[in-house]
Image (cartoon, rainbow, N blue to C red; front, side):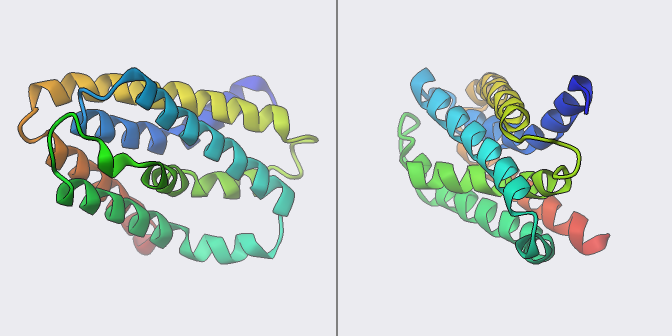
Length: 182
């Protein structure tokens, strides 16, 4: 598989991470750079790991996951969006984005990477270089999402947390409906 195709696949996989980072950037426009890097790196590591897991497992678990992946993404993103609204404290407080919730966001946006890794078992001779590119592209897109979300979040500071939570919920709903209606 050529590099252009791999990058295109990586961009496709990173779009959900971009959307979640964008929503987090809107909800928490004053989040420190170090926290944004931690979240983006976590998303990248999970995306890398899930791609590799899919490639290595290429077995019965994929059949099971393909029937529930959209429900899992919907439930995880809905949970995180509800927590964002419930824990609507001071603007500087990003308590609801604790490491556990960051991992949940990363997992919810990376489930499809397992399927991609699985489907590439006959195309890719090795997985580490390809999964690394997936992770790097996810890191870049997540940071871009934060940057764009911050711009909008600062303009909508009064309602930004609710707006960000709504985006996460709608992303989960979109994933669910796409699979239910297909």
